[in-house]
Amino acid sequence: MKHNLLKSIACIAMLLTTTIALAEDNSLARVENYSGVYVFTDCTPIASYEILGDVYFDKEGKQNAMVLPLYNASTGTMNTTAITYNETPQYTDIRDGLIAQAVMANRQVEGLLLTMTKEGEGRATLIKFKEGEEDKALARVKPHLGVFVFTDCTPVNTFSFVGKINKAGGMSSDYNDLRDRLIKKALKKYPSAQGIITRFVSGGYDSAEAIRF
Image (cartoon, rainbow, N blue to C red; front, top):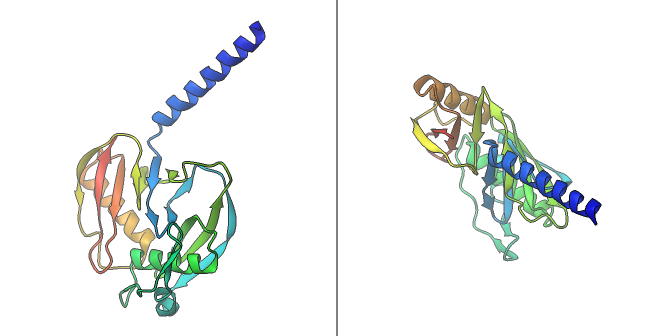
C-alpha cells in the first residue's frame, strides 16, 4: 500500500513538473486549420503522427496546382471554386496550393508539415495523427535569429504586442528571405522583441507584429 502511494505521489509530481515546464515554454503555439487540415510552418506537432507522403508546388506548374478543388475533411464536401493566385505566387498562394494538392492526393490527411524550399517553390509532408491524440493543433515553433516565429499560428502563452513591422520587401514568393527580413527589422526597431507573428497577405505586402512574453 505504502509503495503504491509513493508511486502515485511520484507520478503526480512528474505530471506537475511537465505541466509547469510546458506553461513556461514560449515556443508553444496553436496552428491554424485550413479546409480541415492543420498547417505546420516553421513548427512541429506535439502530437504523435505518421507520414502519408509528400506533395510539391513549383512556380512553373502553379496554375495546375492552384485550380484543384479543395476537399473539406470536416464536412466531407468539395469546394470546386478555383483558388486565386498572383503571377508571382506569394507564401499564402503556395500554402493553399499545397493544401489543395494534399487533400486530393490522400483524404486521410489531417496535417501538413510545410517546407518552403526556394522562391516560388514548396513541399508539404502529409501526416495523419495517431489514434488517441486529441490536441492536434498544438505545436512547437522554431526560433530563427534568436526569435520565435509564429506563422499561421498563435502563441499559447500570454504575450504583449511591442509594435508592428510593415513591408519587409516587395511581393516576393521567397518565404525564408521575407521571414528573416521581418525578424531583422523587428529586432532593429524593437530590440526587446522575443517573437514575431507574421502576417502574409496574398496580393499585398507582408508584415509582422513583434511580441514579448
